[in-house]
Length: 52
Image (cartoon, rainbow, N blue to C red; front, side):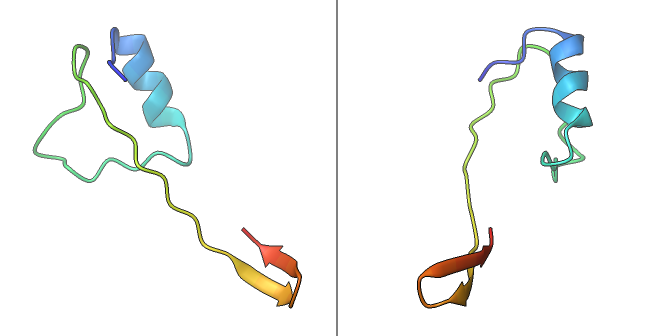
């Protein structure tokens, strides 16, 4: 995803699920980001997920 404007950068930074770990590299318009997903599951019972 390419950040095309300061508004897009600000919107992304405002999301609770977004964490930017590279403080030495400022997130700015024109940058392209690659998103990687991860998930963890805890089973409540054998066939039932308790938390995602």
